Length: 401
Image (spheres, rainbow, N blue to C red):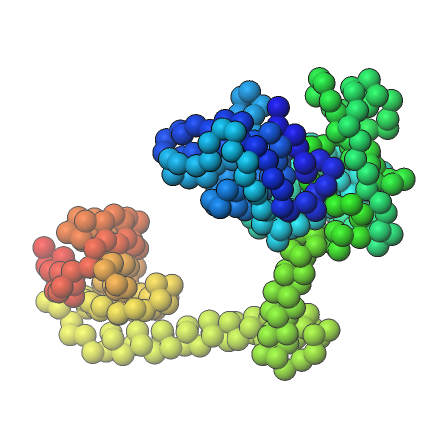
C-alpha cells in the first residue's frame, strides 16, 4: 500500500518515490508509487495537481483495491522500479487545505452550539458546502450562522495547534470523536486542540491560524437540513475583493457612501414605483388618444363597422392590449392588432360590445396561417406565431373572409 506522506505533513510539496506499477487505461497512464504527497480525490476533497517524473499530474484517484493512481495522460510514463520526483501545486494544496480545515472548525462550532451534526461535505470549484442536520425556523437561522461563524473564527484567531494521530479502531473509540469512523484497520484522527477530534484522511493545516478566515456566503433549507456555502483563507480574500469592488462601484454610481447604499436603494425603489404608476397612467391616456385617432381615421365599412388593422413593430404586448381595449370602447369597432419582435408575431383581436363578430374564430384562422396558437372569447382573443412578410394584409383579409 502506498505510504500517504500528506497524512503527517500537508506542507510537503516535493518528494521522491519508487514506481511500483504502471498501466494504461483508455489512453491514459496511471502510476502507483511506494509513497506519495499527492492527495487523491475522496472524502469531499478534490485531488492535488502537480508534476510527477516531469509529467503533468492530471488527476489522482483511489481504485477499488485502495491503490492510489497518479494519472499522467498519454500512453507512456515511468516504469516500475524507477525512482521519480514529484512536485505539488502548492497554491491549490493550500487552498484546499484551508477549506477542509475550516470545515472541521465550522462543523464543530455548529455541533457545540446547536447539536447540529454534519451529514455531508464537498469542496467545489466555487465554494465549500456542508450539510447540517438542523431543523429551525427561517428567522432563527441567520442568528445561528453568525454565532457559529464567531466561534469558528475565534478558534482560527487563537491559532490553536492541529495534531494528527494514526490509531487502531479501539484506540480511536476512546476519544471524543465528533463523528464515527468506519475504517477497519488504521484510523487517522485530526485533533484541533481543546476543540475537535475527527477521523479524517484529508489534508489539514498544522495550526488553525493558517485558515485565515471563515465566512458563510449563503444557506439553503430543505427537509430538516441546512446546506451552508462558505469560504476560507485565500478564497475568502478573493471573494472579499470581488464583493468590495462591486460595493464601491454601486456606491459611486449612486453618489453615496458605502454605508448609505441601502437607504439609496430604498429611495430608488420608491421612485421607481412612483414612476411606474405614473407611466401606467400616461400609457392609458396615450392609448385613449391613439385609439380615438385610429378610429377617426378609419372609414366606415359597408358592413356597418370600422375595421382597425395595425401592426405595431416592437410594441410592448401589454401596451398593445391596453390600446385594443380603448379601441373597442368605441362603438362599431373591430380591432386586429399585432406586434412583431425578431421572427415572431403576437396578436390581439377584439370587437366592440355592439358587434356580433366572433374574434376567437378570426384568431384561430390567423394562428393557423402563422403556424402558432391562440384563442380567447368571442369579444377578445390573443395568440401568436411566426412572422409574416405582409402581416397587415393577412389580418385585413381575415375580416373579409
